[in-house]
Image (tube, rainbow, N blue to C red; front, top):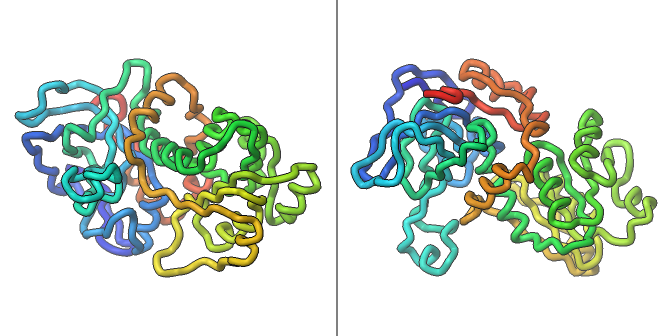
Length: 341
């Protein structure tokens, strides 16, 4: 099959005879329609880890939708032609973490979607049938949306609170919509790309601040906002993580959602955090949230169109991994088979 395969740091190539994944008895063979480019794919391209160790050679991509081609012998409730989205994370259900309701920390977990390829064969339990009203393109955003939903669960946003979102890529744009719909009174976006100001306001931002032009914490005080209750950091740089802790108000919770560098500790002013009694949280993948994500996409609660910065073929995606022109603007999708396989 044709696939966009990573062989090592910066070693990406299109292969036309990459082995198809085997179809197990409890698995579903899916012709990939769309697959999103994630920040973890960039990390892997740069020779760094993702949610799990990288084993070469491997097709990138895990945010996939597609059409069922064939099912394993044990699969009874899906058939060829069904339109589906896929959760890339499989759990064993028998280790200590799985048996204690912490499946996403499964000791035997594995990724079952390598979506920058023509075909994937995930277990049936990872496959979600789509309603007719939801397009395959939009369904490819279910996985990143499900990760954001887990972050929202951890953040415990309360109605009427003030939220600061650092970074307005596709993840920041999803969080902005989720926070407004969860009842945030104010959503402040911190983003250095001025061209994203209109998008921020369209999606519900109360205030757009360019950190290269203003001191964010001072500007928030100048706007008459007494306290920042929640901060969501969506970038993953040490500088933006430090800013998140600085911006956070008294009694605030900070969600460090952006993926940082392994083994590279961020600066932490413990005394300042102590004075504000901060709660700092991180968010790991998407336990039990794919169904909710698909429901939000189906009903149009989350606006998808402004999040997508480009739909590319494999040759174009190989170049995008190198230059990231569209990735910096929003969500980039690889189109493999489109609406029909």
